[in-house]
Image 1 (cartoon, rainbow, N blue to C red):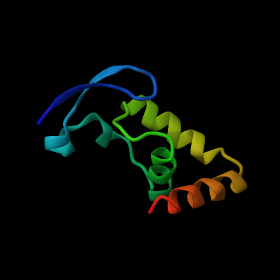
Image 2: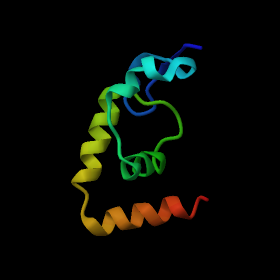
Image 3: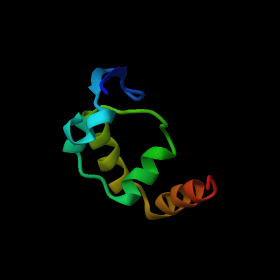
Image 4: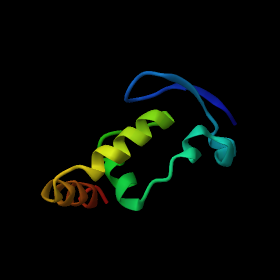
Length: 78
């Protein structure tokens, strides 16, 4: 299943391949569990690869105390 979507962060139009995830553009971006948690605290829908990269880099440069705060915020959603 392929779906044309707009990136929730930048609005760029791209094709989400949730039915064939190994072929989706997002698979080109390697994310850690911490990266995924950080992104999930801000977005609930698909993001383009460019924004996934930007958010991964953004998280790496957050002060340590803000990273802990983000982790607790995500933990509270369970």
